[in-house]
Structure formats: structure tokens, C-alpha cells
Length: 329
Ligand code: UDP
Ligand code: MG
Image 1 (spheres, protein in one colour):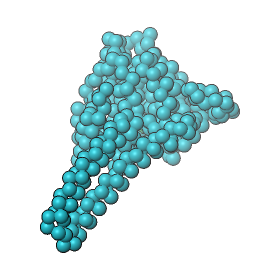
Image 2 (tube, protein in one colour):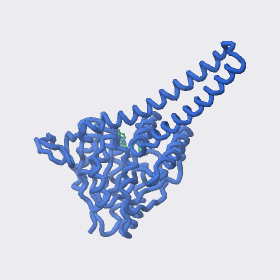
Image 3 (cartoon, protein in one colour):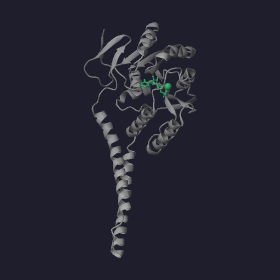
Image 4 (spheres, helix red, strand yellow):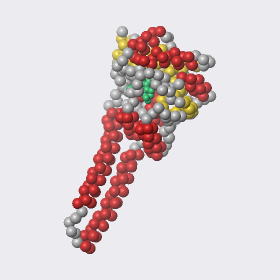
């Protein structure tokens, strides 16, 4: 009998929680020789999500919920689920039923054939705005160009089945600035992509907006490649060479033809251009510095407030897996 844990990060999902459990159960109970349990992670929701989860876990033995002490973001919420999962494999699903539960059977099939990471690859990007699609294209193109040792999987999200091996590997990575999609790729092992179509949200609204996605993309870029820094060095060399040539040109012209003190347009263009390039490179260095700043503090990735009705208090060392907690009633 295989045991699979389904991890569901939830942030303000009160409308969908009650729909989610029966919808998924309907499909997973048909899978032979396999027992499923659920870990819902309440990521500091401000609506009635926690109450819904409390009653769900009281009603069903196979449901556990972790409630984080505040909103830590989906990446951290997923990590909490991963830390507490006890199955032979884990499936990560969104609470809003955008990830079709009928795909689970197929994932389990491939897992049983020996794959460690069965990820669902979206075949459509419909239902997304043109802007979101274009930005996704640009992001993947940049990541592909920059990451040389391994390739970021395209159009693959967090909907996936991970074997115990991947779970243990992910638990080793305690970085704060988490770009989970990159971490999944980084751990390697045997990957299988299966196609799926993203469904419309069952209810509620998405929490992602343009800036959230931009931040995630920046995080992905700065935590997986230093290529932008290299690019700036390269740009610096090119500009210095060009400046040198231009200097010779200006000097020669002045010596040969005298200098009738002109060139305000040239001067201002050069100044603004150089100023821009300098600010850009400072910004890029700053992004990396920011990463270092956050990582050196070694804060835990999340804090748990409550597990299945029991309030948690942390004692002593939190590392490595932040599992050292005491139950306080
Ligand atoms: N989510 C979360 N913490 C957050 C934001 C989102 O746990 O800070 C969860 C959310 O409840 C959902 C999943 O992450 O289960 C995906 O979020 P959403 O549906 O808003 O994003 P989209 O599907 O539009 O990318
Ligand atoms: Mg969604």
C-alpha cells in the first residue's frame, strides 16, 4: 500500500475549501492500492479559511492542517507542507481546483514506473492576460540563456508529484528567498512531464498580480544565476572600449581642426547614458546584496501557529527542519 500526501497551500480560500476535498477524494479513492492524506497549509488567511480547515480536519481523519503565524507566501507555505509530509510521495495542488484532480491517477502511474518527479505541464496559457503570457515568455527565455548547467522547466508549475527522495532533498534547502520551481529543477532525479489544462478558478480571486510575478521572476533570476552580474562586467568593458575610441576621435578632431566649444548634445547624451548604465548595474548588484541580506539572517522559512487545533510554541534550535516544537494547549 502506497501512502501519498497531498499538500494544499491556502490563502483566503474559504469559498473553495469545502469543494476541494470531495472533488479530489472522488478521483483519488479510485486509485488502487494507494492511501491518500491531506495537509492543508493556512498561509495566514484573513477570511474564514482557518475555520473551514478546522471543521474539515475534525470531520476527516486523513486531513491535517498547519496554520502559519502570518502570511508567508505560497513558496514558504509549500515548504511547511513538505516538512510535515509523511507519505512515500507528495502531490502539491492549489486549493482553487485549477489543478484537475483527475490527473492524479496518471501521476501515480508514472511514479510507480520509477519517475521521482512527475510534473504537470500546462498546454494552454489561455485565461491569462497577454501581459502575463509575454512576461512569462521573456522570463523563460532569459533563464534558458543564463542557466547553463540545468534547464528551467517551461510552463511547469507547482502541480506535481514528488517522490520521498525529492522531498528529503528539498528539506535540505533552507533558503529564505525561495523560488520553488527552480529548486525542483535543481534537485534533478528522474522527471516526467505530463500535459494538463489549467482550469478556471472554482471560486474566489487570484492573489497574484503583475508585481508579485515580477518579484518572483527577480527572485528566480537572482537565486539561480549570477549571469546578470557577468553581463554588467561585460557591458562595462564594452563601454570603456567605446569611450576610449571616442576619446581618440575627439582629441584628433580638436588637434587637427581646433575646438569651437560645441557638443552640448553629445555631452548630455553621454552623461545620461552612462548615468543610466551605472544605476542599472548598481540596481543589479543591489538585488544580489538584498538576497545576501535576507539569507545571512538565517530566519526560519515559516512559523507555525497551530496544527490540528493545537497551538505551537517553538523551543530551542529551529534548524534543520524546524520540527522542534512543543505542543501547548
Ligand atoms: N497561496 C498561498 N499564499 C499566498 C498566495 C497564494 O498559499 O500568499 C495559495 C493559494 O491559496 C492557492 C495557490 O497558492 O492555493 C495559488 O494561488 P492563486 O490561485 O491565487 O494563484 P494563480 O493560480 O492565479 O497563479
Ligand atoms: Mg489559482
